[in-house]
Image (cartoon, rainbow over all chains, first blue to last red; front, side, top):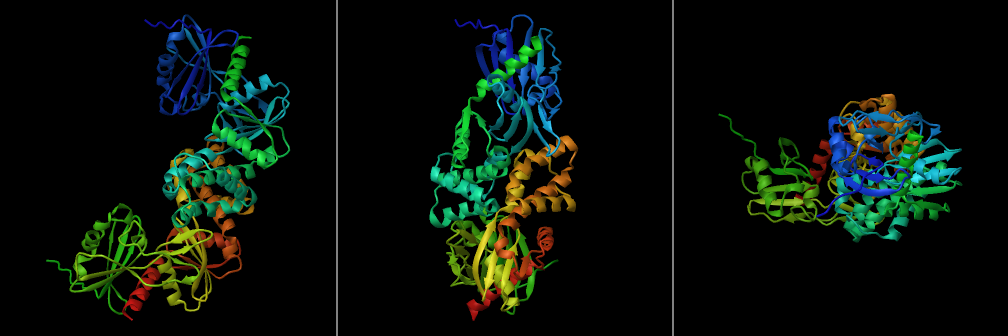
Length: 301
Length: 301
């Protein structure tokens, strides 16, 4: 017989559009247990958040428990809207939003996202990772890159978010490689680093050529037998090259941290290195937890 | 009682990936009747082409009949592969490919596409439109733009295709506006010309900014109430601006013809006009028929 004896002093939650991760935490910030769910914000109506949470963390609860959450759970279509703070601002700006719960023992707080009025931009979740990173690196100034579906470039100075910019590079890669004629030309996995670097160079040197290079990937396959793996890496190079060209005012001459522990983050670090821009890679789970812990401690402090 | 008394001297067919158009023609090249089908090449196995054709044109046939077709029907996955001619070449290069038919009275010929070895590129169908345009404008030199899902820019000199380049602009517009987070921000129709021109200017002046402008369309909607119609027109401006930036070596200082009778073609003409590049708009059905007729006449000549 298996019995779950973990009881949380508080619970940390990272709740995004497509999935949710939760951690049972000790008062001092140690992880006691971890759980996941595919009940992302995108598929939940407002009254479905509490049951979805309890399914995952119910076993950890004994008595009144505080939950601190970040991510799209604080969007207008989430559990409770946590209005954006506007840059320039601290990474844990203002107060947390409290969600309404049926279970009176449960106190759920959501960390607000950050917005930029012009050029218009928004983030939800990344502010918590940045906050965690800064809590571990006090006084750090520079630029943080958070690769993903919507990659963010964030300028940090004097413990504040000065400005930021989002690139839809990950989502463009998926849409182009799966939803256009290039789906016939592009493998679903595999990597060819030379092809990646060729795409990167083209896009960085001549960003106006990107649009014409895309169909070439198809034609190269038809006429010259370009492999699906090479086409995949070259498309990635073209799109990340376009992003690095557009984000150059952010990273040029700056101290750079790339938050992310997956292959994609490694690719960004390597791509920046080709431009003479060394970047430090940082574990994203670790800084997410540090950020949620910082928010919990301020709440209780 | 209705009786279809149209009998064709020959039949012209434009058979693309998603649909087919056929015309009953007189020997002298007059259109006697027209019909359409949604049985595009993309959904037909090789032995399904003849039945699909006869469903549409069977009533026009009395005795031995020649069919001249262009488009993806000549691709490897079409009815019969009509191997590409390589640039530089005439727009009606080499011989037509003959398809195998069950009905001995039916002689089906397919016009070959054109390829470019480097940068790799291919066309099927557009060569026939260009051929029709040139048959009506003998000695014309300049650049032909054929807007669509895959827009082509084609350099014509001395009655030959010198080079060409394909931009996936139409398909990118669909994939980005329907398959990414921007689907929440972009209306399915409507137009805002000022927003289009703003996107066009951004992409032409600073093509490296395109990738960052895409997510801004979403954020502008969330923060500043940018309308779906304006976001739609701005996205179109960004993508067409990127295409004009990339195709500038083609159109700059050249005589330009835009083949197409839809709104999209008018948008290209207007966009080129903002760059001091006047273009003539040409009816695409008319030049398709002229090209098919030229191929028929050469076959019979």
